[in-house]
Structures are given as structure tokens and as C-alpha cells.
Image (cartoon, rainbow, N blue to C red; front, side):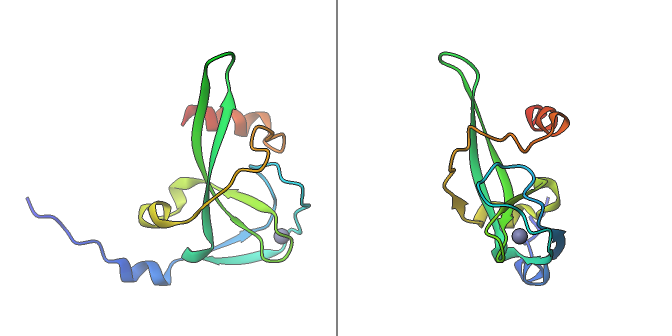
Length: 114
Ligand SMILES: [Zn+2]
């Protein structure tokens, strides 16, 4: 077996074209729907928590970006972000993360399967 060295230089070329939609996390800012091109340094992660009753809660990580124009957080599915970026991207503090009413029912179900 041979351990293959990961080529981090490829990450410098990584980019993703997205739209600012504000989907995935409720914040107080309104999304501007601008088309955006993200680089690895734009990705942030957010530790989310949902209370499941008296002593139980569920934690998970969300990935996304904060729009430079409207300051809105938009979530990106983790699987389309390279794992190296997921591990080193900065974590942002949850602000009212109990409230994720922007999630549609389907998105909520999907996030529960993680
Ligand atoms: Zn925006």
C-alpha cells in the first residue's frame, strides 16, 4: 500500500459558482440573490444544534458562505466542498441557530439523515 500525498495546490484553483439565497440557516439578513464565485477562503462552517427534548440534542456541521454584499449565510451541501477545505475552513458562531425556519421540510429531513 502506498499513501498518496494530497495535492493541496489544486485547492488554490478551486472555485464554485453559487447564488446567494440565504437557504439553510435562518439569519436576520435578507439574501440578495447575487451570482457569486466562491474560493476556498470563502467557505465557513457552522455548528448547529437542535434540541430533541429534555436531555437530548442533535449536533451537526453546516458549510456555506457569508455573502460579501448582504452578509447573509447560504448553506452549501458539504459533499461538493473538498474535504481539505471542510477541515480548515473557519467556524462561525451560531446566532440563533435553533431557528432554521428557512429550511424547507424536505431539506430538514435531508439534514436529519446526516
Ligand atoms: Zn447576498
